Length: 276
Image (cartoon, rainbow, N blue to C red; front, side):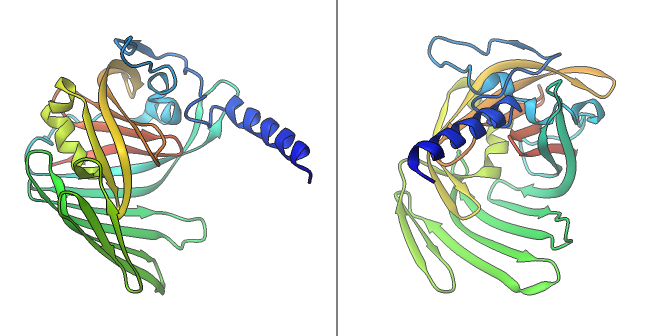
């Protein structure tokens, strides 16, 4: 295929995907959702914030927000994985529950166990243990373990540490060192920061530890309040958006008690099931 034909085909494909709302930066505003305070001159949010719930608007009518527990101190939380498989002509997302996430945090250590169900029943399980320190819960050291159910040979472990300037990751057959540009924070250690209200008062610039991968130059900021449909009516949640290198725009929807009820990341999304 010559270059001109390739560009033509690629352009048509991109437009088709955008028309379905599957590109986070081009998705259209879903119906039945109201926003307040999401637009400021300092930060043009047209490409991210109006779509905070677009990936899960087909799931929300059956979602009941958790009303007990706190994420401000030590906690345990369970989320369900809500995948998005395209949208209908009415811009309603096709959502399927196909996994789970178990989190625990005690102020010094963050633990996670993520299970993603596969159609071939070869479920993928990823476990992380991150030792944290300081008021931002920065990562000091960590272990990441990935495996496939019933396939013992598909298993690997990575270990890492951060000295405040560089992160070092080691596997069975490799060693990788990367410089960081800001505080290194594990993805799930962001939840107690959101619960504390610190990010609502001041934007957070950081480097993301995504399992054992560095995602530098991240910005997490408060964008305002969003009213969304849920089981039995509506609820209002604070909307935070994370953008940066190597990620899709990620939205955290947080209630007034600091519970992170929803995390949307386009095709992969998380809904809080219980908290203790």
